[in-house]
Amino acid sequence: MKSERQYREDICRFGKLLHDRSYIAATDGNLSVRLDSDAILCTPTMMSKGMMEPEDLVVVNLAGRRVIGRRNVSSEIAMHLLIYKLRPDVHGIVHAHPPTATGYAAAGLPLNQALVSEIVISLGCIPLARYATPGTAELTQALEPLVPDYDAILMANHGVVTYGADLLQAYMKMETVEHFACITMVTHLLGRQQLLSGEDVRKLVVARERYGISTPVQQGVGCPVTADAQAPPVAHASAAEDGQERFSVTREELMSIVKDAVRNTKRRW
Ligand SMILES: [Zn+2]
Image 1 (tube, helix red, strand yellow):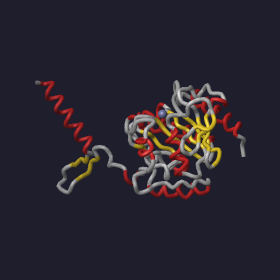
Image 2 (cartoon, protein in one colour):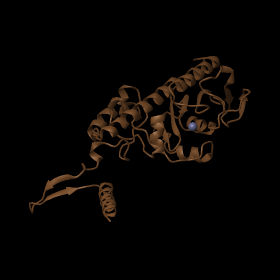
Image 3 (tube, protein in one colour):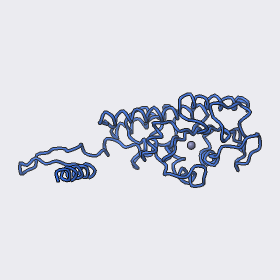
């Protein structure tokens, strides 16, 4: 078991890593460690998490009241307390704004597709919590339904929160989320996604136990989305009985075709 001093040094080290990797800017982000059943060591508000000294950190009780420290505690302390309350297995939490993953959160897109086997094993998928004003009870309400089942959550129009058995696990999950967001973005740039099948995902879920990962993967609620649930290919052609070639398109694609046609007609007039 580490001493409080070592936990303080850990938080400063991972805060610097978040800053060095541009996962946070200015005074963004916050980190915490559960010291014991009624003491949480947390980063202060209004300070760069890349430039903290161990003495800058604050200890609060489970009611969020400061018991040690000169600075004011993070404005997101309620989010940390919620996660510690709902997840007795969690001892470290990281909140940051890594640009690619936060881009997905700002686009209203969860990272919930079965695109990479390692992600299915490590995180299952990364859902998107609805938007809520930072530092308010709305934010904890938005996260509450997702915290028991996921170890990483996108926060709409805001950022990402990850947590684990210790601060290192929580930090590495933040790296994993941002890396997966980059990979997902590349598949969008390539214009093609080849999702794993439901059977592939089931095998990976079994493999999770071998890695000691116990957080359940929520299957059957579209997370992760597998090839089985994927929309039909664009303008899929098939030969009908009457010999006519038929195409199937999604509603979005149809709307886009109609809009283009209307735009072209207007131009001609
Ligand atoms: Zn934030």
